[in-house]
Length: 475
Image 1 (cartoon, helix red, strand yellow):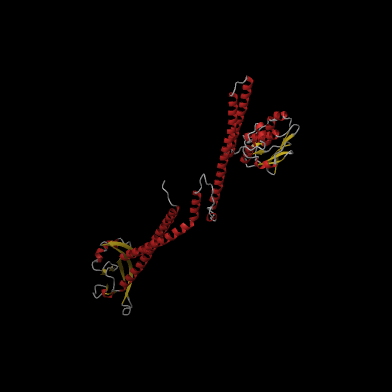
Image 2 (cartoon, rainbow, N blue to C red):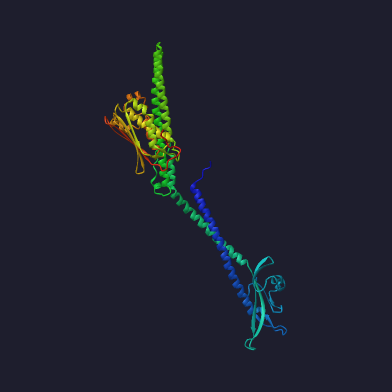
């Protein structure tokens, strides 16, 4: 892939725009100069034609009325003229021009200005009619009408146009050179924060997530959001990698322990010949440990799905209905442990999948039942308050030690590892509940005192509109 420099592209783009502007301006200016010079040239032609009209005198030949006195004319040598009487008689001319300009005069279209080419030379001509008053003092003045055609070569106009074009081109080149240098300096200085941001971002790797946006970047309105987005993204990626690392390490430790137990059980069965009842008991123990490993793997996969996969858009669930479903499923467990279960709540729709809502309620209620003794109560309540849905699960059991409270949502954490293993726990239940709640942009908290019971409070944003495909329906 060919790399391109943003600075060079910006400089090139601006210089190209300046070049187009300079070329357009130069072209317009040259056209304006040409028109100005042409108007001045036309004024000059009329002045010389008027001078030629002033040279019309009485003719010495009695047969001629007037003639042009060449001694009163001081004209450029390249100019040509023809003076005619109303009858078409030539009164004066540049030698040989009357016959040569017959075609040009015929195509002139009357009085006024026009251009023509003669002997490879371009001319600008003026045809005008005038009246010459002769002998004003002696005879009171005699009016003589004449037709004057005066032409001058236009090479001077092209010379002036070339000079103007040369001036504007040189000025444009100098201006482009100066502005290009200044622009390059300013762009390099202005793009320095962007280069600093790129350098800082290039230092990020899977081993180093540290990214600190340069101060100069945060001062620029266009770059500050990008820098903050990079910081947030890298922080989320770091947390995700950290979760995966912890999950892998914790899972490896737990699976290693479970595999060691299974291996020890198999080795113990193979050390000596045993009775059929002993083999059956050993196989039953192996089945229990295998089921525990299966549950551990399932919960690990569920936590990974909850943390990495966003919730489906538009999916909602009635949390109160999900709690009633979970309570109905766990009613045999509650009856076996002789724990009274109370379920209360109103319709409360949240943005959560039905399976996740039932898993949340089941885990919370299961924890409460496991840590409650006979003749005690477990109360659950779902309510809507100030646009939020609050789920409470309260038990009157043994409680959680104060030192363990900050760690109860950590994976594989057990306040009482022996009791948890005896109950078949994996230490992932509350971690999974936390992942479900945070996936729905909610919060979960636990309050507990040893010997007094535990209260779990889940707060979720209320979702407007029920009846979607994820709504849990109580049986």
